[in-house]
Length: 179
Image (tube, rainbow, N blue to C red; front, side, top):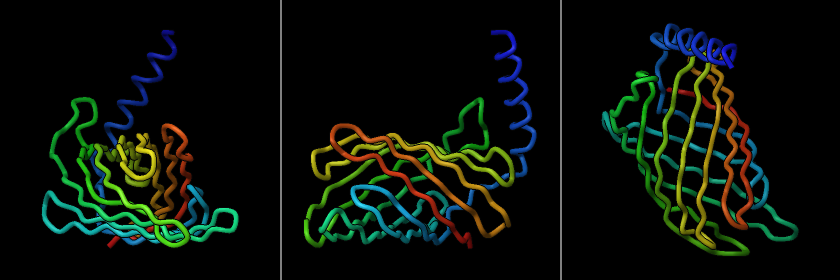
């Protein structure tokens, strides 16, 4: 137990010293692969339109068995400015919008949630989100992700969303260009 506490304290102090040089980038375009209700490619984007407001959108043509459909999500994120005592460089936020599917099956719903992005180092950023979706059978989602910046403008990102009920969990892996 003592070794675990010492390791946690060392990791926390190391993360605190390197995160001072880290910056969270909200303006980006991304491409990748998603394994969700179906699987297929995705394209996503995010644009900071004001100091506290970010517009986000994503689109993914997917296939399940013999059904083809397009999954989409459009929303707005409010950067709260709320700082956590133990991670002062984290960016907390609230989000809301619409998500849905169209094609062989059609459904549209709303989503809302909270999240935090935390720069561990100038190259590594963590993401956590909790959201609720009215799409389909109504479900909650807990998402965790990581981004690795191999240059100031390019990053590899991966997320895993664990969903409640009969909604399939979602895995995403892709690359983003920050501008």
